[in-house]
Length: 260
Image (cartoon, rainbow, N blue to C red; front, top):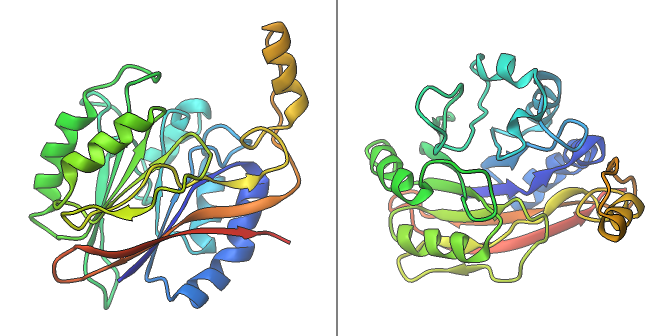
């Protein structure tokens, strides 16, 4: 199985990149399953039924999220549907939505998808390490192929989670920082790891936003409006090849493609 993960989709430029490039990437990489982090797909912060629909219609199979999930009020409506959208599993019990799912596509082995959110420099949630242990055990009863989106700020937290889960999941890929890292590897137990997938959207500013107001914020400390950038639009992420029978990753490759 070949699984394509798309890093954080930012605003309309990011959605345009997915719409334009994903059909080509599916074909060129023979991708069987596509997962994308869509928590910033609506105006650069949050997700709505409309932006989720665009991603799904473009060919995304499952949408993951993170700390910006709640930035658009329409997300509550979206989480109440059967859309393949998951939130971090370490939100308290009773939070709308689901933290994991098993994707079943005709002709393919089932794929478990788990979303977690870190706690270092992030909003306080349940312990993602404890939640991951329970969720992975549950998912492995249905499939050995499990992909984990670890939405976190701290590099150490992402690395530690991957090391803990090595041999029990197919891949752990980090999101949130929007800067693609160069540490892709297969861990000793057969788990693919990449600390951050990067982001899909405009790269002409500061992690998807226009540079000037961000610079003014750092200079003055005063609140600024951060608009989504427009130019140098790229789709970033990772392609992972997985053994269907064992769930072990055989390769992981970073991808970065420019949108015309």
